[in-house]
Image 1 (spheres, rainbow, N blue to C red):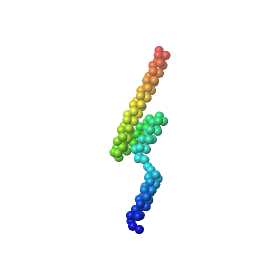
Image 2 (image 1 turned 30 degrees about the horizontal axis):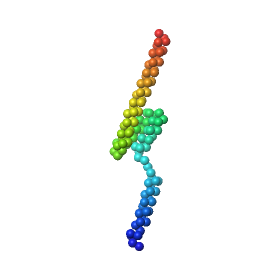
Image 3 (image 1 turned 90 degrees about the vertical axis):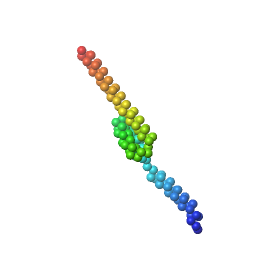
Length: 108
């Protein structure tokens, strides 16, 4: 038999091997994993942990330079989280100031 007769069998074997290896060795990029973990922390309300994960993901994205959309999403998420944390700090400060004012009015 000639090489051309074995060629379809070799191609089918290579295709099957590549499909099996892609299924078995399916692996996400580190920036994507960090981004997903940051999303989980954000949804749970742990904003500080989410910021840490987003910043680590951003550092990894900058190393690889292939995920421009992911980089933009991470930057936007970081802006939103920093704004939310500042807002929470402002609310806590306002509440504590209002409580102190009420206590001082009762004393006077």
